[in-house]
Structure formats: C-alpha cells, structure tokens
Length: 188
Image (cartoon, rainbow, N blue to C red; front, top):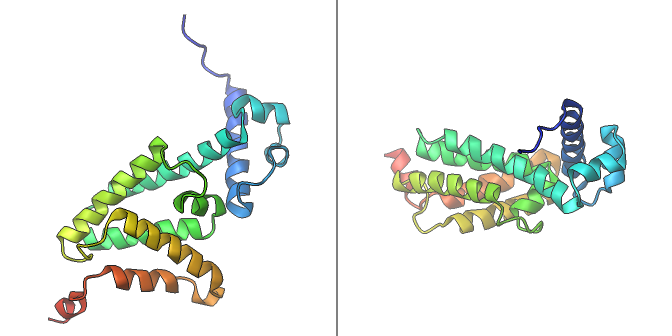
C-alpha cells in the first residue's frame, strides 16, 4: 500500500514555511532561527520540524528551489548565444546581490554544491557559456568554474560599492570575459 498524499493544510503550511524561510534567508542569511521562521510563517515550531527535520534541510530546500528556477531560466535561453550568456550572468548576479543565502550558495559557503539543483544549474550555465564561446563573444580560455569565481568576486565587489555604483562590478567582469578582439570586431 502506497503513502497517502499530504493533506491540503499540510501542503499550505509547508508552502508558508518555505516562503517565510526564503524571505528571511534572503534578507538576513541562513542564521535566522527556525522559531523566527515559524513565527513569520504563522505556524508552530513543530510544524516547521515536521516538514524540515533540520535547519539544513530547510536551507537546502530553499536554495534548491532558487537554483532550479535559475536552471529553468537558463534552459530556455540559447537562441542568441552572447546576449543570452551575458543576460543570464546579469540575472544571476542580480538575484544573488540581494539574497544572502543565494550568494552564499553560489560562492560555495553553504556546502550544497553536490545537490541535483546545483548540478542542473551548472549544466545549463555551461551550455550557455559554450554557445557564447563558439560564437566568438566570450574568451575561449574561460571555463565555467572561472566564471563562477568571477561572479563570486563581482558579488563581493558590489557589496562594497555604494548603491549608486551598483552593477559596476558586473560591467567590469563582462568586459573581461569578452575576447580581446571583440571591440575591434564590433567596429569593423
């Protein structure tokens, strides 16, 4: 005999916990206590623990959901290699710039790199990078881990810039990812 489907109220409570956790982790990082998340979700601590037996399970669920969203977005791109690659890079930077938990996941400090969601995102990102390199719009010597490291640097740089300079770190990184002859080719 199979497992019963979760009750509707249990599904609603789980969704409320995830929403509260997503917002709290984005704004305050993953150190937000589970009791605070329960309070923000309007449920008891037992409800949070029933759905997510550990804080790590809740953090992983929130981050995996966001990584899956990014992977889905990347998978829809590909018709315009350079534009798609740089647009997606900008979207990831924008997403992580205001989301402490996502920024931590992207720079590897949450320890969920081996998760299926992270692997999906890496594969989709690699596909965009390879297409942009084949089109000649991204340096051929750059790897996906290199771009990942550059993105971590962009996020660190932009966290130190005044709000009026937001995006400067990404602009500098994009210029560095283009091949040296890209400017000459555009002018020709």
